[in-house]
Structures are given as C-alpha cells and as structure tokens.
Length: 372
Image (cartoon, rainbow, N blue to C red; front, side, top):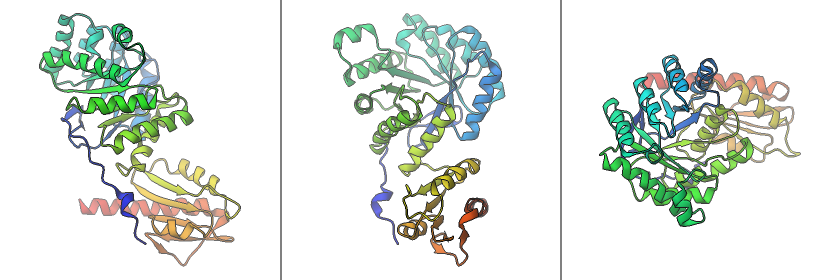
C-alpha cells in the first residue's frame, strides 16, 4: 500500500544566512538543531556538567547556560573543558561577563545589546565577538520588553516584539556585525507565531524559535508543539527550544518528536500505537511504555507500529519497519511490510519485540556503514 503523497509534504524553508554555534551550522538550509538549557546552579559545576552530559546522550545539539555573575563565568571555564556540546552563555546587563566567557571559549553569546548600557559597552562586546568569531543571539521575550515600548503600545502585540527586535538588531547593524540569530518568544502561542512571521520578512539572519514559559510537561508540550509546529510548517525556524518546567531531557525528547512528526528530522524509535479499546489482544499501553524505556539508547531512526487488534494493525504494520498486529494469544509480526509466519507470544511480547527491534537496528546500522 502506497503512502499518500501529502504525508510527505516538502516544507520550503525560509532563506537565511548561515552561522555556526561551535561546529553546529544554523540557517541556510542546515539541519534544524535542538537546544536546551541547564536548570542547575551554574556555580555547581559538577551538577551542571552532569546535566549537560545527560543532554548530550539525549541528542541535544546546543546547550545554553545562564551566567548571571562573574562567579558563574569562572564556573563556566571549568564546565566548558568537561563537555563536548557547543555552549551558549545567557547574559543580561553586565557586558563584562560576555567578555569573560568569550575568553573562556564560549560558542555563542545570548545578550540583548539594548540592555547592556552605552554604545561603548555594546561595541566592546561586538568587537570581542568579531575577534573570537563568536555569534550572538538576540533574545526578545514578551515578559521583558523595554519600558518605553510598553508605554507606547499599551498592550502586547506582535508589533511590539518586532520593534524591540529591530531596535537590538540595529545596534549590531551599525557595528557591521551580521553573525547573529534572533528569537521573539512569548508564552502566548499566537503572539509568538505572528511575531516570528513579521520578523522573518524583515531580516535574513537565522531564527531561533520556541514558546517561552510554556508550562509543565503536558501543557508545555502541547503549546510548544502547536507553536513550533505552525512555524516550521511555514518554513520559519532554524533552531528550536522546547521550554518546559521539567527535566531538560524532556525538552530534547519533545523537540525531536516535533521534528519527527513533521518529517523534518528523525532520531531513535518512532512508535505508532493505537489508543486501545476492548478489541486489544495484549496490553498495548504497558508494552509501548516499557519499550520506550528500554529502547531509549537507540539513535537510529526506525518506525515501529504496535496495534492491539487486526482492524488497523495489518495496515499500520505494513507501513512500518517493524510492526505488530494483535491476535488471540499470539500476534502477527511484520518487517519492512512483509508478514512473518512466526507469531509473537502475547505473554512475552515486550521481550520479543525488544529483541527484534534491536536486531533490525543492528542490521540498519550495518547497511548505513557499508553505504558510506
């Protein structure tokens, strides 16, 4: 059975300039990168290093660290030497912190020129960024807009965020610096979407997209998926962050799930599973839940369908790399659309599926290696 061509829609990306955060390309058609942010106290170097390494294992491309003080900057020096993933320093107000982390090898500086003081201070940061070939991220947030813009507009609108962004961008333009990316985030989905739409027509630099302060894992995942999904589907966005009041590893997982759902980027096992009903012949919910835990270490993209009955099971299984359609006592097993004669025992289906998936991934990895 052929898949409907509309499920393979090609998203036309917005044209943008290319910058690099460490060795990660951003913009100009580069793979959309996934970012997260540490939630430890930066001066607790051991905890911060541990969290960054956990994020690396989860597949994160870039990690942002808050550097609120000079003590945090000194901690950053230690942290940078212990991790491999590119690091962004999140800095507000004190331009001297930006100069210090640049000295310690930061890969990108998140700082708004408008909130670090006079033109001399802004110039010193930009000169330092030029000299060290460090990009800058301008991060506009609806919760921290300039007071004069709040008075001017009275209410939050996309135009407020756009004007704030362009004001900060002008600071860099006047200094002939174009290695930057921009975000215009809000916790309001529609405000964020429209702000990004407006900004995408004004500049050529890459855009970092996300819904800020999205909430806990359930509500935040929903809001982020809608907002980020809308923008990516329109070709807007070069790097993303899912902002959750939860473990940052969940941010990375949700980020990959968003990209996976839009056929933009895949990593690990993509489970297609039925919501279950009285027709299910085995415990689908527990099977998926347990396999997600057991197979977290797999990074090779693979589609696995787990359907509890024969109504939709054969159809879904035939479109997946590995598939199972529930049957009485034993369930049918499919590989690359072909139904195997041997069936899976429903009593030990989790163990059997794990073994079969790992064998398939091993085979796929060998094929990838041989084709290189």
